[in-house]
Length: 130
Image 1 (cartoon, helix red, strand yellow):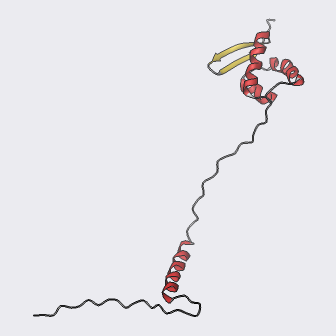
Image 2 (image 1 turned 90 degrees about the vertical axis):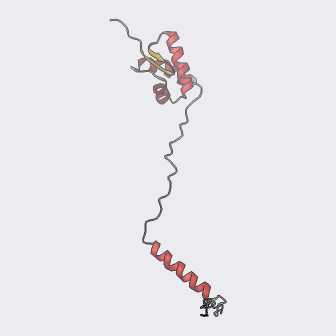
């Protein structure tokens, strides 16, 4: 009967160490990694995520002082368009204080209501019939 061919094992990797104490097999593996890294350097770097746009923190007043209240009574009734955001920006007060100021000016009769729709309140100056 014919003899079966035996498959021979591949030769064992050399575990001889060089002067630095590293085996030749590990050095060969590291050399392959360095070559692969050199090939990747030609590609563009991966884009990093941005942290998002940061806005400057507003430092608006939460209460009127005497000067601010006097300015409110003098200037705001002269504005053509009076909304929470307009008062907040020009007077440097927060939104809730601007809404309260608009209610007070309306009660005093210094401004007139144009539209009151949900949270958006729109007022204008008092128009005198000439």
